[in-house]
Image (tube, rainbow, N blue to C red; front, side, top):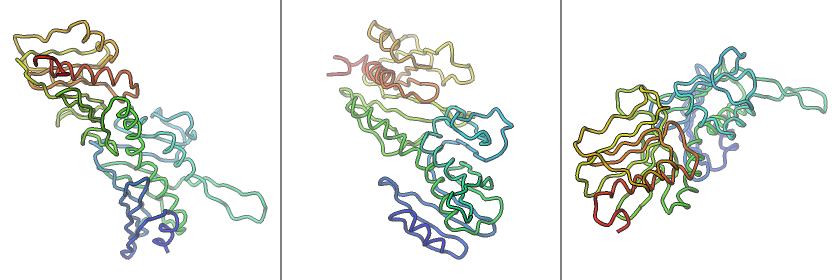
Length: 314
């Protein structure tokens, strides 16, 4: 019954029952999501979400008793807990919030013509270790209600694909290529070619394996024809704990000409590091300003090719 309910709800879904467990492949907008639903010993819905770089997010219906981040459209009783506030805010877009709020209410059987909706606060959601899980406090007997929770879980799990659409639009403007989904600390979400320089845009939380994690947007490029000049620029507003690893000491400092200064003013990055062999321009959190990102990409390309005869557009 559960497998049939899932296949009815999601067009193109394929389910394989394994006793009290159902494994499902659900296609959404051309991407395939792997899910499993267990009805014993407790009802659990899980969807794989790879490349989360240590991001954790917990969502539950409860009384307001915390100052944790919560969009104003959310019900007052919705509690959000996370280890990365900016990333949680970016992850919970309007589509995800609408799906979660919609999943909260169930119809009550009655003999009147007016539908009665009741709040169901038994379910909670958690994103951890590359998996989005919905837990029920008890056993859920309605297969349609379990399908509701799978629908809400897929809305959360598919956020990286919706996010990538914004970068696809930016890629068209800049003449680059965007990935089909955002991967935190995975492959670049955007690649732009400038002359002989490949510039990438990545989203990640950890610049080094040992650090606790902080949401960042990183524009990077390999240098061509470098003679070893280095440069380190850190915004005064960036906390010391969030500074990226410094460039190695070098007797030669990369010069900032008028065009580079203009691009820096337009981009306003949190940090700019030019090492002997690469360039990294870092923004604290997500950047959804195409002009700032475009300026940072241009600056990375110019710095990466600054020592090569003819500049980045030969």
